[in-house]
Length: 73
Image 1 (cartoon, helix red, strand yellow):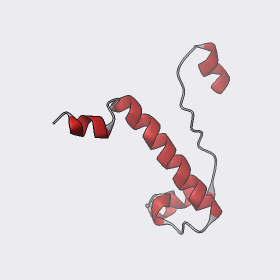
Image 2 (cartoon, one colour):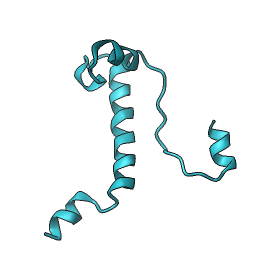
Image 3 (cartoon, rainbow, N blue to C red):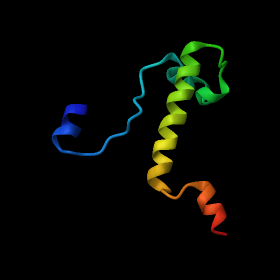
């Protein structure tokens, strides 16, 4: 799949989401990994991946940094 994105010269996120037990558990509990036991390695890594991907998406959706936008008011 990544090869296809490269072939089509499409942008891609730097953050990769790996298969983790914390994601499967989220479907069973209905809660994201952020509410699970963060002392578990799989949960900690899942939270880091989600947070990093969220930052990438927000940078695309709102390219003006929050601090700069607040200073413009």
